[in-house]
Image (cartoon, rainbow, N blue to C red):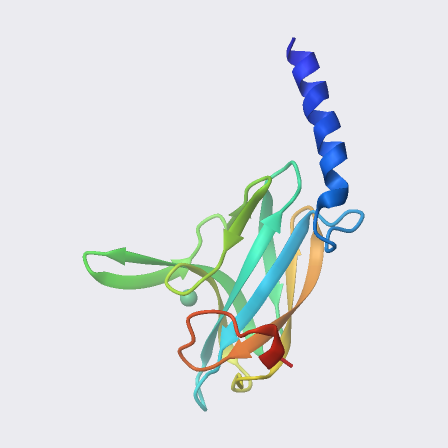
Length: 160
Ligand SMILES: [Cu+2]
């Protein structure tokens, strides 16, 4: 009975696969969309990147490394509120994207911290970010820069 149920589920998955988004290519288990950052003031040392990460795979994924030419380090962070005090720290154990789940990095939550910013992030511009996952390997993402203090991703029309 159990075996039958598993077979039925497998058949369903095969049928549904072609209906997935066009982004799903051969072995693309991790899809990153809406990568964006806020513009930073001149001489700022830090910046923050947000993105939506979807794991279409059957196993949990871990973001193992981040790299961008605009900053000396990039790291997954988490913002928490404790006794009314907001603080942030590297996510212990790293950022994990469970199987068949989407993790949204957004203001006041999980984010990617850029430290040692080499150049101010300018609204309307974009910059590359390499995200290396345990199974999926390295994914190159273009991060669109929105305005200073923006709370959501700039619309694609405004990003260059
Ligand atoms: Cu942070």
